[in-house]
Amino acid sequence: MSLFRRKTTEIPEPAEDAVEPEPTQPGGAPKGRPTPKRRAGTGPVTPAPKTRKEAVAWQKKHANAKVAGQKKLTPTEYRQAVRSGEVLPARDQGPVRALARDYVDTRRMASNYLLWLFPLLLVGYAVQYLQWLTLLLFFVVMLEWVRTGTRIKRLATERGYPNRESAMSLGFYAVSRAYMKRSWRRPLPVKQIGDEI
View (cartoon, rainbow, N blue to C red):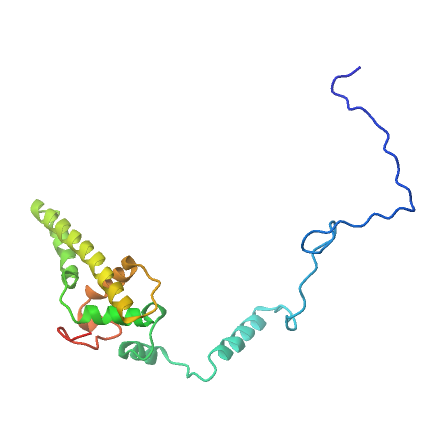
């Protein structure tokens, strides 16, 4: 007699006349069958391209269909359009981002002088007190980042602009624009320092 052997029991065979109803899941498909495909509501299936040439032709055809009615810009024309503000990259679109740009362009900020910190940082390796001065100025820029972001967020809320961005991301956007020279900013500044926004 073995301790680990299973006991064998005879299983009665079901009668052939009795038909068991198939159990169904809450979704309606019976168990043991593949999930039905959703073919209703989909358009005709296009066959996959067999060669790279076919794939490139398909992509060109559908890319042009997306921008039908828009003129295709050359790289030079695109740069000019971005510079003038006619075309905006995705990160610059929206009324809140426009408010942030105007906020930065109408004020003098500590971030305007951030580019001067980098040469100072290099010289700071030789002169010890310049390292502390550079760290202090970086800390001031970080505080300005947070303060600017909260002010822009508050202004956007007061004006009723739809805003899902955090104050930190708005502050980062504003400071990343503020440390550039005015002539380097894209799109170019519309307002002058001291103007009302």
